[in-house]
Length: 114
Image (cartoon, rainbow, N blue to C red; front, side):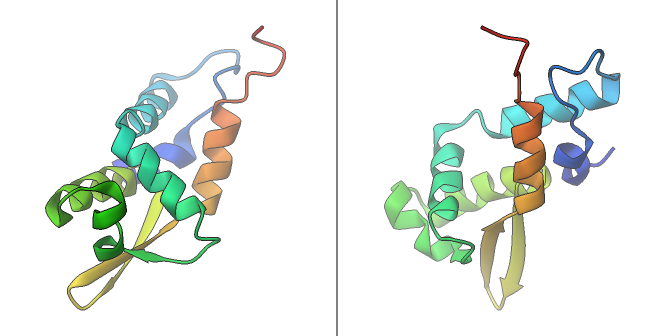
């Protein structure tokens, strides 16, 4: 399985049994979100109401260098949470709405917890 298919392959954690592939895909997604800077990136993208953001516009709010932001964006791109469009030397990113819906379903634990 490619990393880009990770989110689409996830199953809800409340599923009766996860396959090895589903468990690995789910773990890859959670690993991609384990860094606070990546969570901030998701937040910044979410507050743009579907508008794309250039990496150059993320460096200042995150307080990180462009190569570091690019590294974090690649991790999010690899699991399908964001989509990328290259324009010249700059890359523009948006959230992948379908992947976020899948991710929300993965974490849905209604009736299982608390």
